[in-house]
Length: 109
Image 1 (cartoon, rainbow, N blue to C red):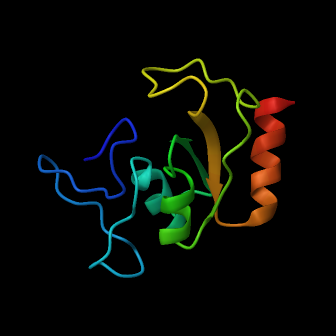
Image 2: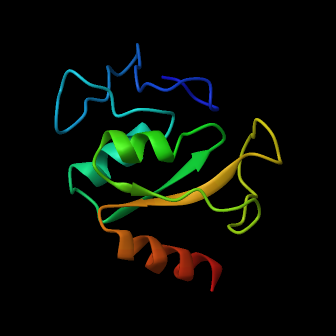
Image 3: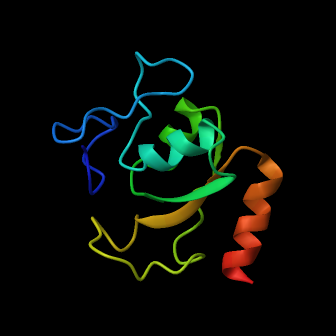
């Protein structure tokens, strides 16, 4: 699987490919594709992803969900290893646009 923002598919030689709920021939997309996939399949109302070059936006669009890449430092970015401190952000993916605002308010106050 492409991790750390190194690709746009969810291909994983160890566990198998994450398949798109709407078309199993397609990928969930991006390093946050698992989050986008479960949101798109309506298994969860929302999920968190990280985005440097599209890893919230691609899985959201590939899976019929909404994704929001907040501006830098709107959400706490004190997590794991980053590609860059000026481009990596944490943000939500949801099935409904209104839920983006709810998650954003819950995280940022």
